Image (cartoon, rainbow over all chains, first blue to last red; front, side):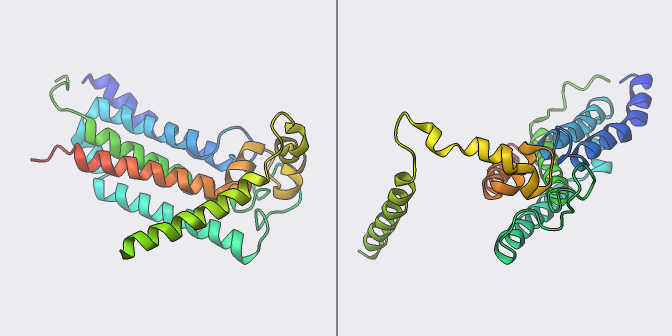
Length: 138
Length: 88
């Protein structure tokens, strides 16, 4: 790939991930949430995949990290939901009464972050499996 | 024979719970008797504290449905990963 494309992708990659994490953090205030944040995060990885090829991305995000991310995030979601429902029998523990702040939603903050990790890791796993090597432009 | 008994017991229990769930639905044509959407809009912010009502419905009122959705997504991703691998 072109040298300009590679350099610009390497510079822009953390900002796209930052935008996705912003969407996940403000999921309970602005439109966004876990699902759109996960899609935005994998857009950054796909940009890196197109310009650098598979080896460049596999150094940053190897396959074992994907599986462990999925497992950990699922476990966290399950724990939070069960804890919220059966121990306290009330919605959205750990929330403060003023709306439109960071801790207004309580546990929905952690649920949004964990959901973003699950979606990003699962979709990147699918993209890794279906990609071919022959179309890479030298 | 034991499998047949287990299947019959499962079908009976499932039918019991399904009957109780379907009885609670409003009459056909009178959906205003149980307007759940209006209740969500009215009590979404005071109950949960999140201004985004969609977020409140997904992660608070219907959290188990979202958990099931995540499980389906992971099952799909894992099956694609296991079938279409490229390592020979």
